[in-house]
Image 1 (cartoon, one colour):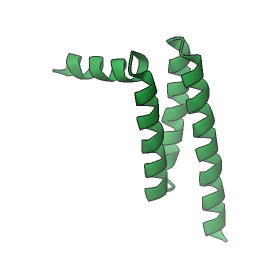
Image 2 (cartoon, rainbow, N blue to C red):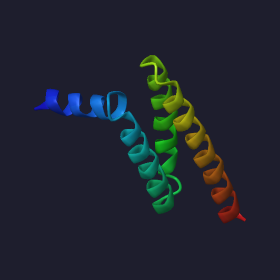
Image 3 (tube, helix red, strand yellow):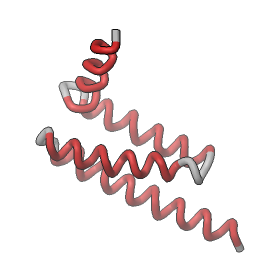
Image 4 (cartoon, rainbow, N blue to C red):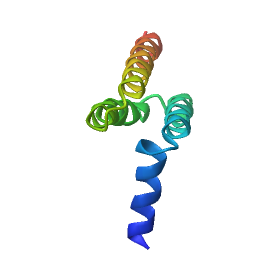
Length: 86
């Protein structure tokens, strides 16, 4: 069972469904960021690590997209936290 689970997510993120997996991950990061701005920091860190993993699989465009979206979400989180502290 665990092998099928790992195989599913490997295929979703790095196989033939890598664009769908990328969109799902970005949507999850945005939803988590909207629900809790502090919890989205974990999503940003995972996004940056995922971009490095995409580079190892030779998926350069996916790596650029997830890295830039993580960076943009991180800037948005910093702006929201700064605005709420004043």
